[in-house]
Image 1 (spheres, rainbow, N blue to C red):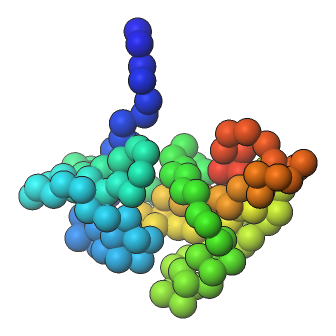
Image 2: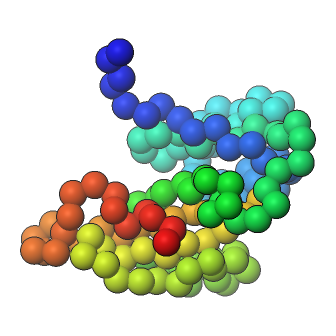
Length: 136
């Protein structure tokens, strides 16, 4: 197998319209492609694809269901303040780690959205990869 990169992550949602509003208008991911029951959102890199769930989903946060979506941000402080002003649920406020700063918010279906601001490139603390996405 010769995998080039991750193309997309399909997320089953309980209310497509509400989830599109969250990811597009609140988080700021542009809509790349839209059909009746399929919406692709992407800024750069992998695509988040929203698709209506056919059965009830999410009885708890994504710690229980195993889904976390990681987004790299330029300024985590302003990102979290903006999300708070729009009444987005903050699951875990900003924490500092060797790799950078991290916070976790919840989408309308309680999926975790891990926001990660990497440490500056010249920092001796900076780690490679996206170590800041882990929810625990």
